[in-house]
Length: 421
Image (cartoon, rainbow, N blue to C red; front, side):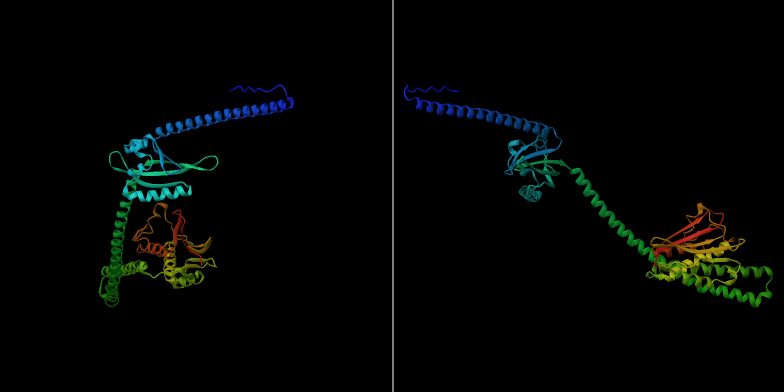
């Protein structure tokens, strides 16, 4: 912005030309420099203005945020805290900046916090942790804090920015839930132990009762039968009928105690699942059934029957009960038929036992698997009401499933499903 005046002599025109050219170049250079400086100053001023505007907008938004916000520089010292933070701790900005904020962190959490902060800052990675921060009331509140690095366009670390939320209620709820869970687990363990003891005592009792009852029952049957055989001619018809009822009741009671004994043995059965051939097992069971009971039945076994993984003794009990049940409910029908077959279901085998009996109505199908559950009266069909309960318990012991298909009018199809051998 200055005028440059040069005085030269009139002689020596060549030197004057050279000097004039040099002066012109100098002036042009000065003008170019001044233009560049003017543009640089304007750009710098604009950048500073934009940065100040951005910073002002950030702090305006941060002060309005419902969370605690802080900012740290590249030297790891904190340079800013929003209004929410200052209101929370009840301190001023001058008390918090630098490392002043550490005075608010609970002493038991400070060392862990600083280690996390230093390691994350050194690695330029985000961090997250829970810690306690002193409230302006003097009480410590649980805080969830997250910090993230910030960089310029060249990738240079400028510092960190962090945000915190109060999670005291969540932490207390979590602690309460953990305490209740521990208490519940303790109660469950106590109840389980008590229940197991009660079950063991019940099984021992049922085994003892079933075993000890059979001796006097057999004696009752034997004496009643002997009385009928040896002195029946001296007893009138009514007396003989009474004695026959005693014998029949003894037979039913003996079978009942035997079924209870079988049921009580199942939980104590040592369980080892082996390959069991149904092609062998089913014919053996059919041969053991009294011939006169099966002579009027058409029993169809669709071979080959697939092999299963099961416990042979329990499997024998299960199949025997299902076949005996099918015979019992089919014997009173015309053209009675029992059909036995297997089908593969991926890695499982389903064994079916179908009868042409009276069937079981859908509303009764859910309770037939329980102890002493009978759909029909004792006078219609003999039985103890334990057979299907034994089947269910034994199949479950072998990790299998059981089911029934029946419309209550045209027979029943019972099935058990076990792993395929």
